[in-house]
Length: 247
Ligand code: NAP
Image (cartoon, rainbow, N blue to C red; front, side, top):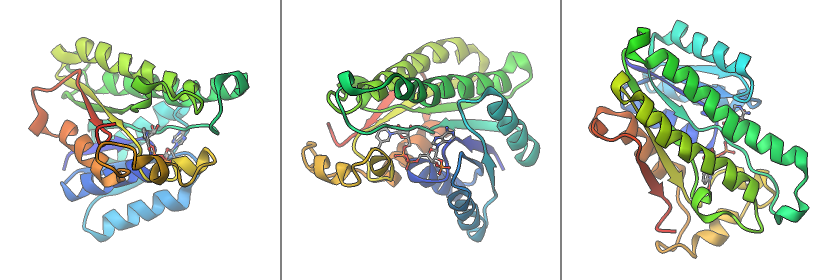
């Protein structure tokens, strides 16, 4: 059984990806930062379906936590063959002139530095020249990287723009190492991230303005992530899939 690690796998897009990955036969390490009950519920659901899963607490913005998380995943499930770099946060909606420095730092620490640390650790473990067996890294960016999120969270948008550059550059570094690196850019997806930014109805309210006329579901993003993780996308690297209803 091949194994994968999903950061922020306890809720939302990460949770949906963990459940779909387990259905497709992967053993899944589910990282979370605070909501142990949600992470354990995903593990239980996977085990109830006959799959294998493990919950791992760790803050992706902490190098120590990231290294420990990879060691635990490898140790418990066997060497990883894929990683989904998904954990992310937003802040309350407001224009940049009203955003305080601490918030900008935290958004970049989790969304950007966290993604870089997780990608670097994955690259170190998967690279053939370092004894790895190759594999697939999927980064969860955002349409915000392209749209800029004016008056809502341009800090968040910038933190995702950086991971788009990470995707392009790391894909070029890792091609000869047997490692593919791709990203998905979700649009307005119905998860709890919007409530954490103070707007629980944001995806529903704005989703109707997308060309497909509705918000997306976490399961629809998971399909794209799983395709990029799997051998079905074997000639795809440095690519982006916008899962945004055309937004
Ligand atoms: P969500 O429902 O709020 O879930 C966030 C997940 O990330 C949770 O599992 C949470 O763990 C984890 N997490 C948060 N901070 C963390 C940290 N410092 N270290 C480790 N894990 C952490 O969010 P979501 O909507 O599924 O978003 C997932 C990804 O998709 C994010 O990168 C987000 O930016 C991106 N995205 C989402 C949308 C959307 O509309 N939903 C659109 C574009 C992009 P706990 O359960 O322990 O808190």
